[in-house]
Length: 267
Image (cartoon, rainbow, N blue to C red; front, side, top):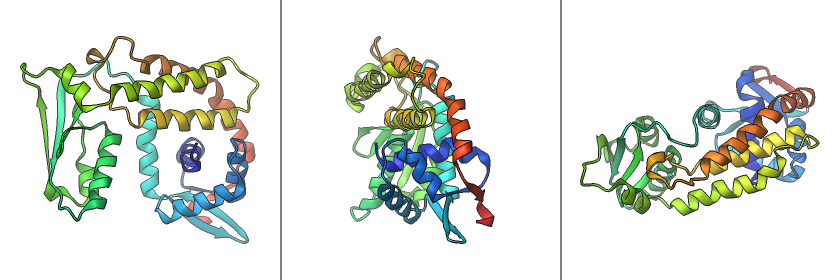
């Protein structure tokens, strides 16, 4: 797994809810060493995340500490909602759709890439070239404002006409086989861990959460009634939650003994 994904999972699990804290770089190196990430890879990833505005660096004496930026904290708060409070299976869809149309100048390659990435994470798929769609009432206005493209974007909330075959539309807009394959692969990798109590709980929980986030981040949570009856998200989620419940508290106890932290403003 990418070190950045593991670092985000680490900060989301053990720093986010504890207040504005900085963590000693040596502690971070120790934690990621438990999942096979070398010291140099951790240090270079920390530097890249500082440069990207995800982490802030503080020096205290001869030691370096790292804490979340407000932007990264918001990303992780949203991620926690998606992981822990939102089911991977959308059983309660109310029949509404959010549509977003955009027209960006050809020179705005970066803005176009950023918009498409954020739309994918939020559950949108490309209905047509400049028209994306997501199930339910999705508030995407903050993302649009943050990217500075509000004047180039139009957002609508609507229901499909009876003449629209929603099953066909979903198959044409999203690659269902690719989404399903990610859930199937996740479950195959983790089902053998469900009853394993001998593994390092901190390493197991960290890898589990990081991989689950990677699995669900490209899933738009399409209405279950319009998906194949053997849709694998439900079974994969049951496996995830079973292992997460078993490892969460032991992982926190190990982390509490291992991590050296300091308040962000004092670092």
